[in-house]
Length: 510
Image (cartoon, rainbow, N blue to C red; front, side, top):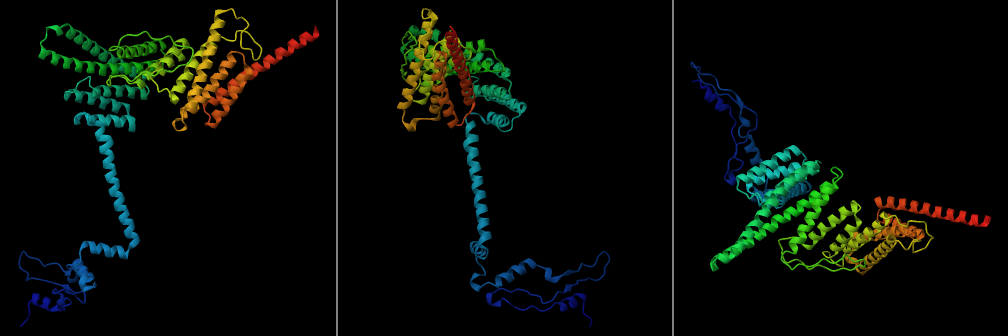
């Protein structure tokens, strides 16, 4: 009797042997590569199945089982940690590199997340998310990848989102966005556009302060008509209004100081407008600080040096002593640039009241006062006539200008001596690089004063000391200035000796 095709195919399959019976697991292993061909009777609409190798069935599983069988019986079914341990023992170097790469990658991800949350997300926590999203893009196109058009577009979208979210247009957050737009215009640089933006914001802030002042005056007139309970409520509202007024006034002063800086820049060069803005800022600060205190007459700026420190202001919402001193110094610097030295000196003296009396900043301010005196002395054209070397008086001592010049010179020398005294009294750990710069500037000012007064040898010695110190500090523009000053003084000394020689020759001829 003939066998069917399926029976004949099965008969060709080799028998398996039990290699894992002792472990309770059976595994088929084949000793040769054979093919199983399964066929069916040829019926209509059917076709013959394909031929495939039998030993390719479940090949990966068979290989893993074979590898496991080569291990000791106690470790054939171990966990993942044990496998990793075995791999590390087999390949210690590669395992160490892989472990370090994994830990470094995880640490970088965690650190990047911390930086993003700490310095990016938290920086915009005061804004609603729609505003913060647009503002982050604007800051990116301003600080990271400078694209002014994109940055300006997102700044405007941030302002629109702030208005949609109901944010106060005079809040610190919204005003900060507007000032950031002006800073972007300055960075491009388009200082005229920056001035335009700041002028618009400053005008709105000043009008808002005026409205708050009017509301406060109206309340003062109606206080007598209120009851006891209403008085307490109105007092609280008045306190909040006063805080709001000072906050907006602070923004207004800062914008006026910035406008003065922009008007003084070489791109604009409008010193008159710069002076108007800086004067308004300084007057507003001083007027606000003395608003709640009794009026007092400001002292006349002394020629002799003295340092009196202003006590910290009680109002924590307004400018600190450092900010007031910075505003005064900005106006004084403007006066120095426009050669109004007699106006700059009192402002520098006023800055001393708001600075620490024992600091490098105080040393610099003391020298700035002396610099204003010396610059005014040079502007007056002294010495008016050639004088003998080492002389301390001019030939025409009856002139009022001569007496004024002598007074300026004595004042400048006194302020320079005071700056040196303050610097020498500073402990070494409190000295900053600013003190080194001040020391070189003091030598330069002494040389300029001596040169203006005709003491040429003393001027040359001061310039040489200043040049030596500047080269020790690394040089810079000051080195070129000192070299030019030495050349100028040298020519003056040479001319003086030539004149003296000709005078001696003339006397000998006679």
